[in-house]
Image (cartoon, rainbow, N blue to C red; front, side, top):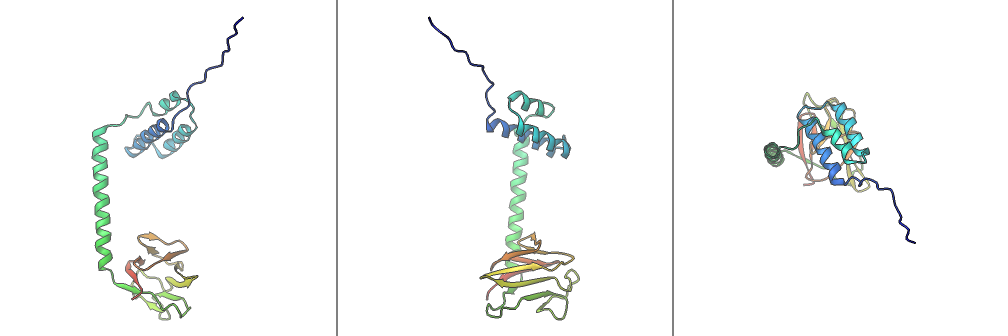
Length: 183
């Protein structure tokens, strides 16, 4: 007597590559203006929860599939524009005036702003009266924005609260830019 065992067949699980391909189509759809941001978010959530290939296909059925020529053009434009941004930043970094970090032994914070009581007075309309403060904490330099109107930046990124800075960093107070230096 032979017995046969039958097991229920389940559809194959989605691979990460299939899910990534669907997410890429959705990203391209929102970049081309074919999907609203809300629709993109909802479809992305559904794609991440999908269990079968037909569920993914339904999410991308109304979107055009990858056009290799368009992808090549967009990729080239992206690479060229990224290169010009990096080149401009490198060129500007060498031309920025130096901002010498205070001597480590002082222990007092360096206040930066338009106020005459500031240790570094910057008389520019985009600099607040009490704009920022530079202190030495635990062997690191910390730049803290003091609620300035036009913001404090480190290497092009706005400082929210405080940020650790090092020699060579580009710091901005409003529209005034400097390169940090120890000598």
